[in-house]
Image (cartoon, rainbow, N blue to C red):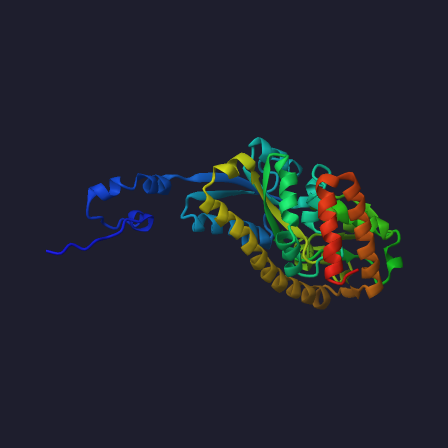
Length: 352
């Protein structure tokens, strides 16, 4: 009688498929042990719960990783402030109170100046392809990872998060329109807008609506159009300023360096690929949400679109590179090297 030969794989072990010999099972103990082993990471975000992108982007990213690792790496999602304050999530991840975060690099520019480059500099990137070319092909991300590693963090990579859209109470068409404009902003963007003549103001996300309503600020950005609409900016502003100040701005995913080192190479690749895939997913979903948001802002909320003149963007590019050069002087080890790459990028793409 001829006996059919079957190959033992993790798939047919997990599915309960029969094997012909107990000896075959004993011959593959490492495979079975791997299937039974589960690693769980507690990851916190700055996305407010109740926003469309909390589930559609953050939760989707976590589910993608868990599914692709067959449940061996589970990312446990946590709302902002649920374990630590958003501003402490980098330190908490380094110390182990969190395993990682899906968040915004601008929070760390005081600790890691190179995080400003990860976040994206105003008037530089025009689309995701340019951003990924700069980060992955020109090597900027490699340098950024070195800077994060000094803090006990593995920087997985950027997630393109749409543009930086300014919502305001008055239009911006010329450079003079920035003069004295009180803008809620963060990170290196604040330094650039200050050079443009604006007055940067720091306001927590949960207080933004009231700040616009009461006149503490005249304008604000919270991601792209859909991000601002999710915060109900259409109720307290009259203008959306276009084009976006940069597109995309980036989120980030980082992980405790020791936890990262314990992963197998296959799972490291899954997480890395999920970060890059999420850029494309987020961009498409944001485009849909942004286009719908513009329609709502104009046709339902009675707002207007204010277009900046080309000369404003040209001036902003030069101011942005001035800030890049200032940071390079302060942090030559990392930001200096990234800044040199950015000057080259701007030259190659004909922006300066």
